[in-house]
Length: 135
Image 1 (cartoon, one colour):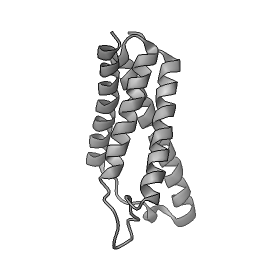
Image 2 (cartoon, one colour):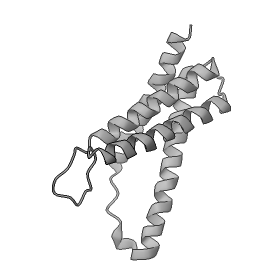
Image 3 (cartoon, one colour):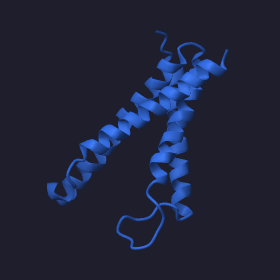
Image 4 (cartoon, one colour):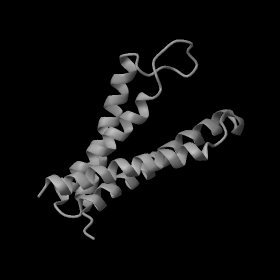
């Protein structure tokens, strides 16, 4: 196994930059709506955007690493998930601090597991393609 930390960091950074940029673009174009709004776009664009950005990050990580693209792509996904969970926990702690624990919705474990499987699949597939196309 040949994990390349620099390739993983670049893949994660690219994934997050694309995620933030794509989310901003989707929001300014009215594709993503406010959950409290009556009219608006479709929520399905966000998971598709996230899958695509992690796929690109996994692919780039695999190409940069030059070896074990599949494993480096999965590492991008794992790092992405851990950073995302940390940022979410921080934001939720601020909400609880300001408004109390009742402000948080119940935890959706099915959604979390499904999201993590999709994220891991995206990075793995991107890294696998980097292995295949890199030869």
